Length: 402
Image 1 (cartoon, rainbow, N blue to C red):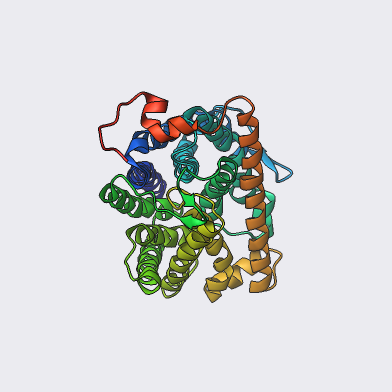
Image 2 (cartoon, rainbow, N blue to C red; image 1 turned 90 degrees about the vertical axis):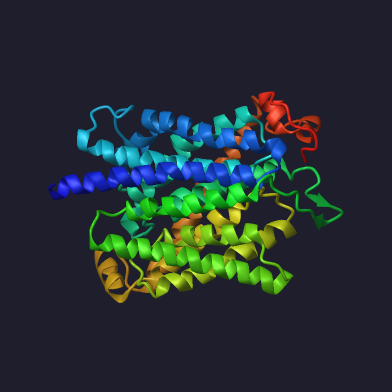
C-alpha cells in the first residue's frame, strides 16, 4: 500500500470514528434530559446526521472548500460537481464534522424547542453559517492567511455549534421549573448510565476527530496522546472542583469536564508538547465548572451543558494555542505568516474567536428570528408539561414519568 492509499484509508477510518460520535451525542443528550423528552432529543440527534449530509453535499462543501472569493467564501459547482474522486474522502470527513457542529445545538435547547424549527435551523447552520466560517479558517479564507490556527475545530466545529445554541436558549428562555424564586433547580436526567456511555463513545470518537485531521504517521501518536491526556486531566479537575465546592462528585460535571478538555485540545493537539496537554486539561475542567456556574447565575438554561463544554472550552483552546505551542512550532508559524511574536499570534486568535462568535451567535439570532416568523419556536406550556415525546411524536409515556 503506497502513501496515498494509507492516507485515504486513515481518513476513511477516522470518518467512521467521527460518525460514531453521533451515537455518543445521542446517548449523552437523551440520557441527560427527562424521560418524557428523551425520544425527542434522540430523534433530533438522529436527524442531524441525515439533514446535514444532504445540505453539506448540496451547497455547504462548495461554500467551505470551493475556490475562494476574496477570502470570504468558496465558489464551485453545487452537489460536488466536478470534484476529483480522491477528494471524496475529504468530503466524507468534513461532512461528519459538519454534523458534529449541528448536533451541539440540540442539547443546549432541549426540552422546549419544537422539532420543525430545529430542522430549519440545522439546515441553515450546515448550509451557510458553518461553511462560511469554515472557509475563513480551512478553505483559504482571510483568517487562515493571517495565521489563525484551529487544528481540528475548537472554533470551526465546537464554538460554532455552541454559539448557535446560545442564541437559541436566550430567545427560548428557560424550561419551566428550572429557575424558581431566583434559585436553580436540577430537573434531572432520564438515565445517567446511558449518558456516561455516550461520553465514553465520544472519547473514542475523538481519536478520529483529532487523529484524522492530520496524515497518518509518527505525529498521529502525539496528537491522540495529547487528546486523551487533556480530556482525562479535565475530567479529574472538574470532579475535584465539585468535591471541593459542594462536597460531592457531580457525575454531569465529571463527564462534561472530560468533554471540555477534549474540545480545548482540539485547537492545538498537533503543535503542543505532551507536557502542555495536562495543563490545558486542568484549565478546561475549571472552565467547564465556572461557565456552568455563570450560566446558572444568569438564568440561561442549557439543558446538557453544551455551552460550557463546546463554547467556553472552545475559546480556551483557541486562545491557549499560541501560549502552549512548542518553540519549534512557534518559529515555523511566525516565519510562515506576518507575525513577529507569540503576542501577535495571540491577537490573531482573539480576532478568530470574535469572528466565530459573530457568525455563530449573530447569525444564530438571525436564523432563529427568521424561522420564528414561519413556525413558533417553543412548544406550548401544556405540551412542555406533557413532554415532547408525545407532543411532537405522539408517543405515550408510562405512568410515573417525570
